[in-house]
Length: 405
Image: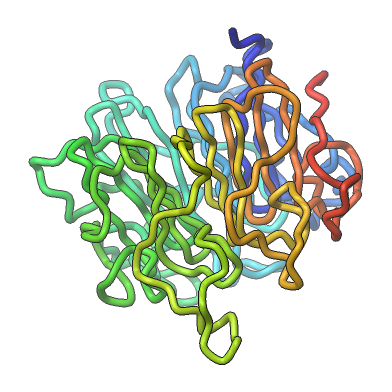
C-alpha cells in the first residue's frame, strides 16, 4: 500500500519533488526555482521551495512534471497548460547563446523567471500525457501519440529539420512541432531523452533515436541523426533513457541493454578490457546486456550524465557508473571512483521510483519517503545543507529528504 506517494525527478543541478498529500510541486537547487545561481537569494536553493503554477495570479496544482538538465516542464492539473521555467543560456552573465528550450517568447536570462505558459497546439483536444527533455531541448507526447519537440537542434536532437538560429548561430526552434522519421504504422508508447538526444519507444518494441551519435549511443550509424531513426541493435523495447553519451534500454521482458560511452562504468558491463590500459580506449560492443544480479527483472531505468540506475521488481535500486561525488550511493572500491557493475543501494523500505540527475540521484519508497545522494553544490539534494559530498564515505550515503514543507 502506498501512503502519501511522492514523485521525484532529478535535473542537472536541481530536483523536483511532488507530494501528492497536498498536491504540491517543490524544487531545490539551481535552475529549478525560477532563478539560477547568480540570483542574490542563492541561500534559498538549499531547501525545498514550492513551485507556483498558474496565470493571472491563479494557483493550480501540477499534473505532470519533468526536470531536465537546465530547465523544467510541467502540465497544470486544472488547465492542462504547458509551463516551463529555469535557465535558458549556455553562457553565464549574458544573452549570447540563448537556447529556447523553454518555448517561444520566454524571457530567458541567467536569473530565470517563474513558470510561464508555452503555447502548444491543440492542447484542449489532444492533452499532454508525457514530458521529457535534454540539455537544451524539450519533448512532449500527447494523448493521440504525437511527439512534439522544441529548443536547441544543433546536433539534430529535435528529430526534425529546423531553420532558425539563435544569437550565436546555433540551430534552434522555439515552437513545438512534430518529429519526423517515425512510420505511420508505429504507435508511440514512451518518450525519453539524453543530453543531446530524443528517444521514442513504440508499441511494436522498436526504438527510435535522434541527435548526437558520435559515441554510438543511438546504435551504429552517422555521427548526428537529424530525424527519428531506428536503433537496429535493440528489439522488444519498452523504454529508454540516456545520459551525456550513453543510453539504457529496458525490454518488455525486463532485460537492460546499454549503448554508447562506458569509460566510467555507466554501461554496467564489469570493467572491460582496455588497450594500453587507457580507459579512453575501452573496447566496447555497440550494444551489450547489463550484467544484472541473477534472476533480477528490471522495472525502471534512469540515466545520469555518467551514472545509471536500475530499479528491480524486488524493490531494490541498483547503481553503476561514475561515483566521484557519491551519485551511486555506494562505496567505490576502485581508484577511478567508478562502479563497474550494478550494486544495490542500501535504504530502508521498498523502492518504487528512481531518478538520475547530472551527478545526483533520487529514490522514492512505497511509503512516500525520498532519499537523495550525490553532488550537492547547488542544493540539489534537497536536504537543507551545503554539504557537497565530495567523497563517498559511509556517513555520506543516502539521506532522507524532509518533505514537511
